[in-house]
Length: 454
Image (tube, rainbow, N blue to C red; front, side):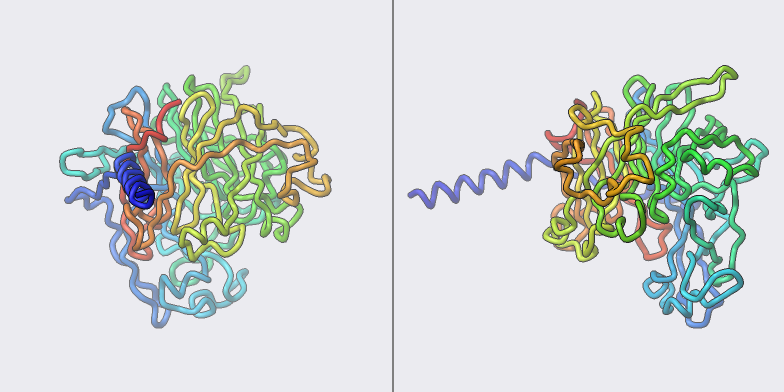
């Protein structure tokens, strides 16, 4: 009798759980030629052809005053892949895909099949009846002089950087104006802010797509002296120690439009990459948006918190074969739930865990010894926070989104965009890497009692 009751209770819990979460998929609407980028064929011997598609899912935002079916998204730096990924992408060994060339050693660098692609913000509209989405407006980014903004790396002297190659492995010139766009918000007056992964920093963009100002870690602004837009350094200098390609990838906005929130994608190389490899403490910044006496936008850091990444073994237990070490996890997005509660996207390429966090009760470390390079041990060397006087932000798991074949429901991999719908559901979109491995862009709407405005 007791066994029967237990089995019945388990069945009811399973049904209740299934009913509690509803997932609706939206796929690309037909007849959108602008989303196709054609085929790229490298001249490298034996290289596979790449069928490229526009990547629109590196971030997401919905304007609370805008149409309920319309969202803003952004593309990142374009189709690109490391030499180590060349086997999967081109079918070539790293040394064949990336031979030694002037200024770049064998096997080093990152390949850009379409280096002239322009970073853009997109207006995306959902068709609830057809379960499709369409790009209804494209806003290419440009400098005040009209130069297009591409995704090639910046020439940096303070922070580390990558050397770009074209799809034929030849060296490309770095571009001081380039932006690796990730997180995205839109202010009530129509301006946008983007989180920038490479340098790293935050970028203000006018409603017409013009980059009006870039904000970087203190001491690194000198690297941008030749940029065609103003660059200032209000961010903590310690952020220049970000691991290569692990800068700012998330961005969120307070309800009143006064504050931006962003997380560093991973712990810093602080004091070095060896510490990064084992670290779990990432940094979350709160910045106030203001104006100087000349009317130019300012960003003033007002708080810095510690976000502790999950144990990579927890992702491995969920089936992620790409969770083999702490640095395999990363923070790819955050979206505001209200009252300084946020939903944070912590992921590998295969599995995303969404955690609700709240800032109340967390320690503000801004301007303390943890922002000083001389501190020993560093924050990144202090996975165990006991004795440090630091309380990390509180985390509660709200959703596991798996792209594994056995998952039900099955989500796309590399979810990088989060937003709330007008009726409080969760909007997610994936980064399809411009189709270099055949992935498509999918939007999912998740209805769950655990996710919504606070």
